Image 1 (cartoon, rainbow, N blue to C red):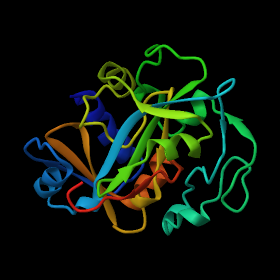
Image 2 (tube, one colour):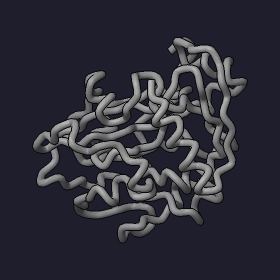
Image 3 (spheres, rainbow, N blue to C red):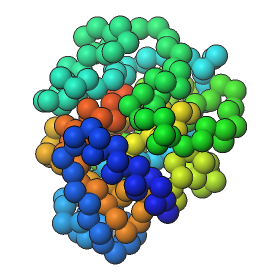
Image 4 (tube, rainbow, N blue to C red):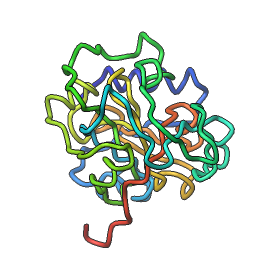
Length: 233
């Protein structure tokens, strides 16, 4: 667990004027259990998976579908179909490739809050992604890879999770503090609830955050890679 990330989140959100609150609770083993402990609905939960995606050339990401920065203006209504790209996209779609720099990947995080970027070592043809989605949905890693123009997506090892997030699995928040970790979000996270909830680097502390403020501050790229989970999944 990471007190460092917990404190960094509070500092970042306070600096950015976010509407949020911290909730202390018992550690929970499932998304449904932690939602109950927080006093929130399951669909408000923002789950974050650290993945590696292979199949890229020269570090370029192909925009296979809508993949845009959420701007402050568009975040007001969180209509992801209308999100305009900050990188020359029109009508919510991009053409061609983009080579993302560290400044673009972790653009809204002050330098003093960033994690060391020397680990993990880069792998040719691969990128690291923090994939965020609503807790009442399930992921499709094949769609995730295709949505970014890659060939295969897989979960990283616990050691790599630690290097990229300074957190243990289950406590990773939906924010990237690492120059090698690209933040993306599924549309399931937006438009349904005024607030989202997530573990804040700790298994026994959560942050409940205004969804518009999350979109504005975290500025995730939007990629559709989930479907609604059936009861019991």
